[in-house]
Length: 72
Image (cartoon, rainbow, N blue to C red; front, side, top):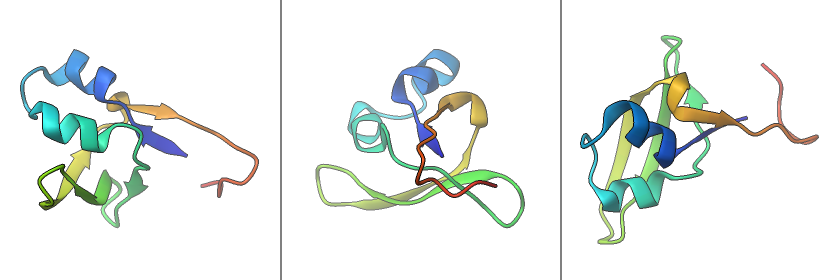
């Protein structure tokens, strides 16, 4: 399972997202969209606002495999 990494995102795309978004996004699972890109369907920032992030680049994710993850 791919999970968003705020640390990797900052390394590749410094300044594109505010800290409040990076805190909310860090560690969230990333899903594969119908078009083949990756995305985060919904996340909520500390102020209660709901957002989605599309596209998410694989280089900004960590691969967190567990025995219970669904394989592609």
